[in-house]
Length: 439
Image 1 (cartoon, rainbow, N blue to C red):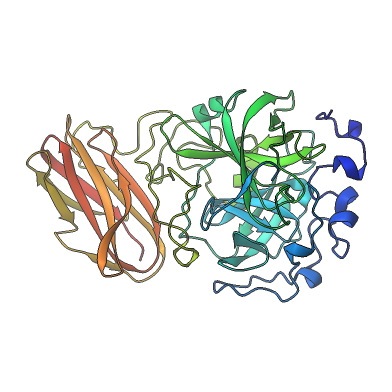
Image 2 (cartoon, rainbow, N blue to C red):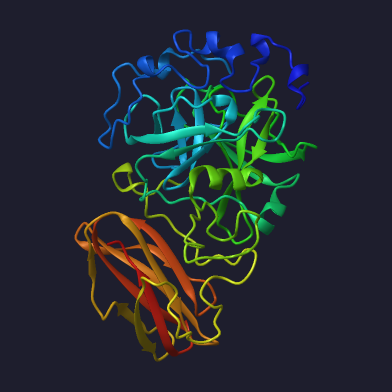
């Protein structure tokens, strides 16, 4: 039996003492690594190795890691759960913003880079250097505040971000809720260091606000510490809410801190707004970035060369209130941002479509956010799509198709040629499309 009181957990190898990556397991897991807040820089060679699949020559080989018994799960396919990142061969984390990774305090702070990809041993993916990593003062397993954060030195602008559950969305974090845990840790079906996922459900929430999930052979394990727990909310898009913290023997379930409970600290520490739909307290305050959230992050779209982009995205979120952009009350003459370029047009009825801006394409010479905010007429149902020229043809890279005349898309794209399409699913009338594009 396990408990959220760490002092009651037996300190034996057979129970795996799963404050994952903790010093009691360090000798068994990584006999050559220092795990006093991460792993030894000299031995791991962590220094922000870049895009091209290069890796430090002395990164630990996952085949050499001990194989004790994610549990009851499966390996992640190429580009599946792309925001799940690896830290120093010891822990897992979550990319929650192009510049920010959240993970667990007990993993420490000695991380010069994080790895995006499916294996700690290289292959497709990349290392991204960090500016700093910090732990929550006094944070750790058993208190519901196992919080830590790294700010990246290079923004990851092409990976579709699964947002943190905030505001009314956190009401879905309740017993019985289906969830998915992801990590690079030990498994019962192969070597350490391979990204795996396992589906389970929430069993309970402790007095310290720690979520208990898993059991019956489905669980996280050593090396999964700091990694994400995802859930699908009512509108079909996904949110991340959990930080893998601790447990007893792998397979019996474990405890997870909740990200939203540390939001004020995460934002003040990094200086980054991590909540595009709310303020740090969870009050509904949608921005132009409150939407275009991944609908199937497990599936694996694109390649790591384009940040695993290209999967289906939601429209503007209305999970806790009116969507950003007006909610179909007619065309608002006020642009949605100071730097926006506004174009206007008219659709005469169902099935009609206009290409914008001005019936043509535009070129982006670098990576960045392509934000389109459509304000359509009252009573109509207009849709918005973003196209990119790829492999000799125009391909949809993002779309917003709610039942409203108002839609928003935020797409993290690389250099290339793009075009927007405004179409009528039902109704007719004038529209305005505000575009905030990479410079």
